[in-house]
Length: 277
View 1 (cartoon, rainbow, N blue to C red):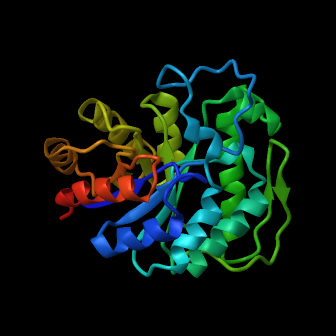
View 2: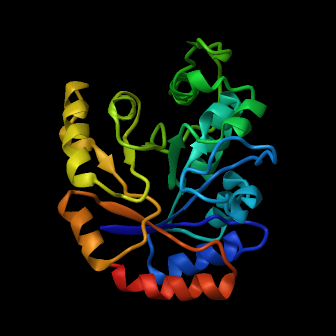
């Protein structure tokens, strides 16, 4: 099983360049970065994990800029988002960013998508909360049209469309791997099966119960059972936990690093190295 990492990179943490080099030298499989454009001070939305919102949420680096730095100083590690808040993006501009990053990195990019939890942040982007799932599906479909090998028009239902256009570069292999994050449930699993390459369950809890449900939905959608990818995300590891994921058929797990300075992050990386295959 491949062992990747995620971290809230901020203006106060280890740099993307130093972290990427250390990950590659140690043999880790990848680096995934989260996204928040801003955190409104007057916020009614509760933090999903409970308690006060951690400091790093308001200080996150732009994941695409940070991953571009990581790509420039590495040759092997995978690069991804966990997660991109697609409803908050102009999909035409984002499709160009993603294609450029994937092209320049040699096809190493994974697009981790999600619906978000912060209603005030989304509202500042003009997102109507009740339609966020539909917005994500619509904008992903538009991006896929732009990545198509031939000029392909797309007529969206939520404010974005694109006429048939020449647009280059294309992502390596035609499109990046797309994974959808979120809690298990019928709506999420229908979206995973209908729109993406797999699921990023945050924390990885309850997979024994949820995976059979997802696999059944995947097969009902006519998808190849062997093609489903499940990548437990933001995991605090133990040998038993990782062995359990491997038994369930997970080929990659993403471990959570602390949003800390260089010394602390490297100490944790050294501890996590014992889990490398």
